[in-house]
Image (cartoon, rainbow, N blue to C red; front, side, top):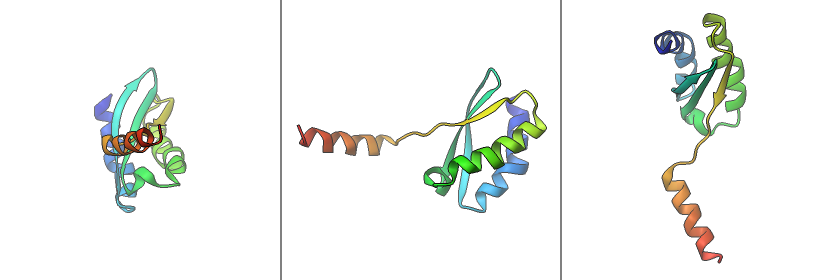
Length: 92
């Protein structure tokens, strides 16, 4: 399954994202739900939700009917979390 997903991403999704200085990483696929992370400039973009729904999910579901939903996993880097902890600990 991951091979099929990678093929569609490489052929249809990645070219679109790279045009916006972004990329995509597949995190997990289970029970029809594909979890992804956007990278590069796409990771913090205000249009990320639209990109996932209109570009990523549409492209993948058209080629791989086993995919029922694509979920964007947002995360904070360890550096950002450490900075937030420092700021919060100063306010105690």
